[in-house]
Amino acid sequence: MEIQISRRFNGPEYDMTCRSSDNVLFKLNTKDIEMHSNMMTMFKSGNSKGGDGIDNSDKEVPSIALTETSSVLELLFQFMRNQPQPELTSITFTALLSLTVAAEKYQVYAVTDRCKVRLRECIPQHPLQVLDLAANHKYAALMDEAAPHTIELKLKDVQSILKPHVFNAWIRYHRTWMDLLHDAYTYQEPTRWHWEGFRDKVGVKAMDSPCEVWTEVWAKVAHRLAAKPESLLQVDDIFHDTQEVIGMRCMSCPKWIEDWHKEVKYQMSKQPKFSTFM
Ligand SMILES: [Zn+2]
Image (cartoon, rainbow, N blue to C red):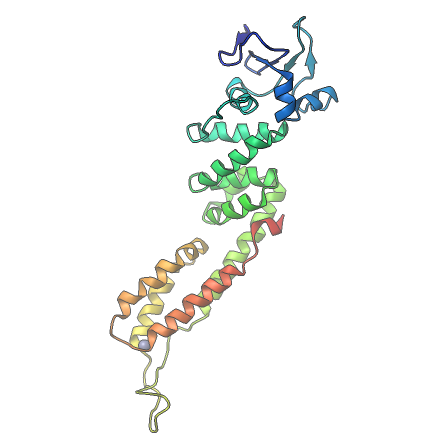
């Protein structure tokens, strides 16, 4: 394939070149590369991990062949020059993943930090891919944020993306969500007897039959939980919606519902984070 020259990195002042996997040549300054990355040290020490080291096919300056595509390098090298840095909001998610991997490989920390911010924004659309990448690079905060969004995914999809040891961690993490769901179901029983009038008064007794409002509300909550752990992520909405069912029908039920809601939230707050399973 014929070698093309990058339109952006083609100035007359350069003392090295890099060639992308799709044969685009970038004319660069060693000073910039050394200041913003560990790329030169890696190549000098022969620890290029994918580049094939110094290639002296260009007789005038050192040339390095890299395994990344030109679109990734085009972005990466922009972060190594004293110029306004590109926005990552306009690049595709696939490009973002490739850029993050390249930035980690060459230790371009200005890029890795920007990538983490953008990856966090992509969690709702791509939770599994973000979790995979975060686990591979030990980004604890990012994997902890992405993991809850993956508990609803099909097992075969999770297994097809995550590396075996990460998948193993995911299975154990998912189990904690199932335990949490069990606790949420069983914290309150489906029947409840209130006291007639004020309990402290003389002559007050428990009701003869269970409160029908409570049973209805309990069933609504159980139905919304639907035996799916991911429904716990909507727990505030689930309990909030019970207010409409209760209305003015029972004065005792709201406080038991509130107690139930608080308990579930408390248990969720204590739940171990994904990174602790790694
Ligand atoms: Zn009641």
